View 1 (cartoon, rainbow, N blue to C red):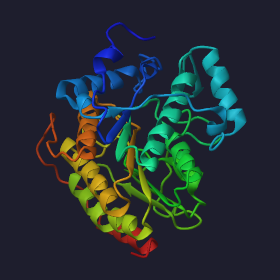
View 2: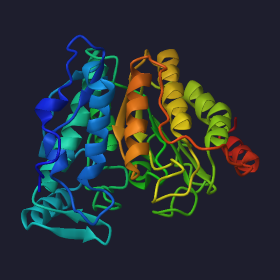
View 3: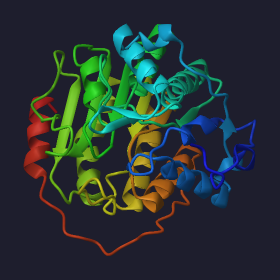
Length: 355
């Protein structure tokens, strides 16, 4: 249920109609919630509050949210899966698998998350916006074509990529920096040579997929399974030696980002070692790369992140990067930590990708 202490959407207005950075949000995302679950509305409360505190809500242009049509959902999902989610949500509170809950708002929230990301993506494709951030939930990158998984009902980023392809975008790169492997997105595109999927995630963490050897039929799947403790230094190395060279080589016309902030060292559901500053660097690097490679066309969509302060700072910093600002924040801080040696992993991935 939507609680009275949640932000009134009227108080979180996104007020700059002339901005070239778009954002999409809907209050229904606060209603898909379960108090005993890590993926609950309080994640959103923290983010919305931080955007208002920093004034970032006044620097971006809000586009209208809307539900994906059934035809759009079928771009990536089976009809039986769509009906299953709709039916389960219609019955009220329950679970589709041991981790993935629904309530009476979940079907609408997931449809609106998907439709909103599609519209934000197409606005960037048309040139109405330069870039954007889809502030949506539930997350989507674990959702498979025919079943829900890992808190995810529909795979928003896969649907957005397919919609962009229908709109004429020939080559799309999807970068997933969530701490958990984007198995649903990989499954959607592992045989598609026109979509480059790259995932940086913690090795052996849920869902247990994403080995470096998983490269897809056309070699356009790139998995970098990181050891626990991998932090800012590791990410700078792997971006410099793997992610950025592959983006340049693939030359996408657009970049979509599954932005999961659970790689932060304080996140309770993972064991990576990123700081807010490190995550800001990732966002800034991706935005800069988009400007160099594909005319700045890049869209972020929210995935995981379960530490409220780290999540809210992460989203705020990603918006700053999209706006071309560098006044990044790190409210958590912390002393530098030793990091594992990932040189052998990087060498293995480079060998597989012929870099």
